[in-house]
Image: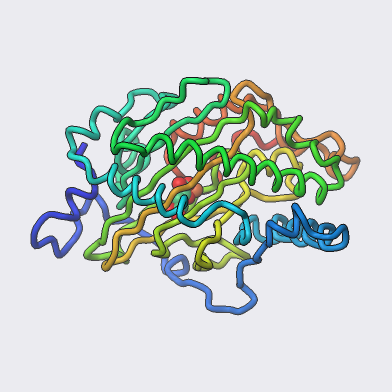
Length: 346
Ligand SMILES: O=C(O)CCC(=O)C(=O)O
Ligand SMILES: [Fe+2]
């Protein structure tokens, strides 16, 4: 399978092959400029080291962001900027490897620890996306993490980065539990977060000669609990809010965080997983790194009984997270179609 990077670098490419022509209805081509649609900003330092008053206020704001948006910018998170830049630089070097070198990391099965490729699921797609990816499953119970051995140092800097993200996600999930009126460690315990799966998803979106006709990643929600995204300073992520598409303009050194399907299930639908997409541009290569933080693969996730009531019975059936990941990764990327498979009819 030819990667999109190679295609985009073909000399004199002025139009995209029809295989990449993605049809978007006119309403979905519009992007909201409404100031009401400005993405909430959460200050992580207030959640962890603010005064009790600042803390409870920050928890309330976080709960509101999860309920109204399922998306927020996270500032003052404590992950060093130079580490973020180093990971992005290594990802760039990884994608610069030759096609032959990258083929070694292609992977065959959905739950292979390392998979690299193009689009999302080329065996099922009629239209391909303007995106190459590298996906690595980071399972803390596996002490021998598998990771590409090229470029040199990629493994070390990335695994350390994932560890830090795991801590940030754990703190956020504590605050989210509290915002739902649950005890701080509720989500951590219910998901066996200690053994929780992280997926390292590096995305490369090369410049595209007809960006309005192509799609980097189509509208979808993520499978885990919380996804933390950083990028190389080039925008492209858009989030859906009140039926509008909104550009996720990152503040430098912030994370773009979105709530994912397992959080919607656990919160019994109080916090909806966020639908987002990645668009492409004609000028610059965009690199993004999404770290999806999820439950442990063997844990069955179901709505918290504390959040069920006479008026709101469990809105989802329970499913083992491993089965959910396979379902999501094995199908076409299409809005929240995977979540529909666990919706209860009551
Ligand atoms: O490229 C991005 O900003 C988003 C990527 C994304 O949504 C994903 O990898 O699930
Ligand atoms: Fe995503």
